[in-house]
Amino acid sequence: MANKSNSRVRMSGWEEKNKALRKECKRLRADLARVAAERDMYLKSLYTLTRKTIPLSAKDIQEMETNPKQLDDILKELGDA
Image (cartoon, rainbow, N blue to C red; front, top):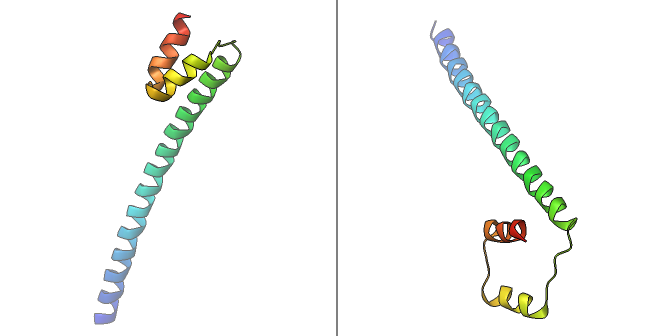
């Protein structure tokens, strides 16, 4: 009788571990989908930007090195140009 009880406890522990792993897998799949959508957005932005001619002088590049900007600021400036 004790063997059946131990077997049920082991099975219950396995079922809980299985449930936890399935939950983590579901979470990771959602994270992957979110990251893939973000990647696609950045690629789309990059493709849009590279289709336009962006005039950059040596002075502009030097200024970027000494005063870096956030991507959102750069995209806003390009949209205003």
